Image (cartoon, rainbow, N blue to C red; front, side, top):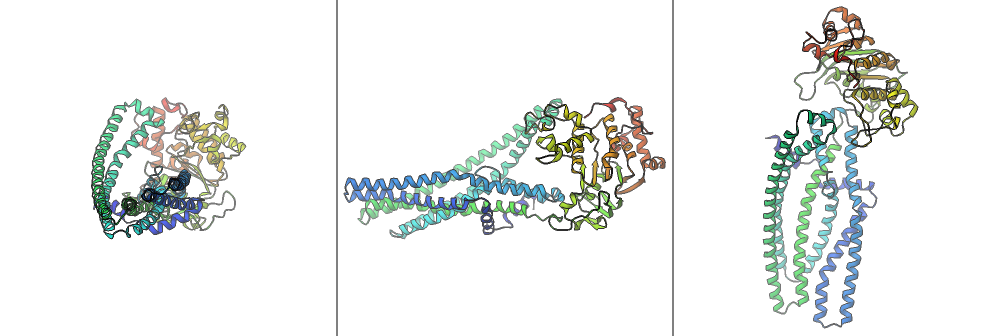
Length: 639
């Protein structure tokens, strides 16, 4: 079975059924005052409009046959008009309350975003979880058409159709069951023919989703400010335009086939309508000519036949729509109920006695990423003492960042344990455990807001505390030169007046954010990667102050930076190959000393005779004796 077929089968077998989803939505409606009352009132108003419209013309025609006075005719007509006016006025008012349906969709979307923003980190690496997130977001995409909004209309359209169906059925049984039989047969046949074409329409939609999605991603890339330089420097315009036209042609071809399919569906519906109305018209006309029906009754029953068909189709179509929309609601609920691998609720709370009371131990730890060929770390053992400054070095892919993720509780090992003060971190509430850490990672987030808000990560930052953290990170003078200072906006996609900070400035901003949290454990994953040599040395000199009184783990490719750490470990082949201080490892003459020599030679000789190994290990700005070496591009501008 192909992957596409497996996905379709999963869609056909939702975890939650229609009744369960309706119960879930009705419970959620408590968060949206007036929603149920509004929709219920709309049902009654629509039924009233239908019944008034059904009896208006036949009643007036019957009065004319009875040769009633003009006053009676006008009075009757006025009564119908007033009733219709009131009903349509109520309908118009209720239709304007569509905002409640949008609120219902926004409420569901809010739950999805809350789940994605607070879920366990491993779920972000889980393919099934991400697929369910995508399905959930599709169920919330589009005003009116989104399943999380449209299902409310469907839920109340079905009872409306059932009530009108009952009224029309009672009316037609007074004439001849033959009409009911003909109407049921033609309506049922029309429904199943339409259902066939609708299923093809869904397939066309699924088929067309891929080129639309690819074209959307392409257009998003073209509009991305960060990619503008690449597009121009590499002359990507013609290639991008060619890809855009390719996806457009695929989409147009699918649209043509959808058009033909819809035309055939409309023709089939038209033929059945003519057949049903022709039979009903002939039958009622024959009964009327025999004198068994008046002209008013003829019009009443003929109108009822047409309406009866509409209600049958509405009921059948409503349940079809409800089933399809329920599948989407189930996808949302399956995402929201996706099991958490961590204790995000409940569990123990870490209890510390001061900043230097964290002892971490990785005991016989093995970890392999999903679909990974081999473990990144295998039977790994490490103890980080309270207040220790630990440097982690190694080639790309050696497991440095993975070690940080295991230590900070972003990941749990496949085998072994990660312990805090002798307790397996699986027993702790993971949200409380995260409070122990602050850090600067390779991938960091800059949000649309002021500089102060980005440092404090809240809407009401403590101004003096923000300034102090920026000062310690070496960014205060830069911020003070800005016209709006700490209120300067970031992210041009949100604020047109926002500024663009350089890479080095952003990393300093992230260090200020790390300091603002004031956590007992600091994690630094290449915090100086975007800094020039002078700025990097400044950060190194501040490092003792930044980490004073705290446990810190520092990842760097620049081996000279490890001089500021109490201990250095070099990772290789899933374990610790060498361990000691910078001076001890440099004197040992092993792998660390070899990589350090290559980096030093690169900076002293301008990069001659250094192979790829030295570059893979990283570049540095210090010589073997720890002095600053500026050669060539090593002293480039900050950021």
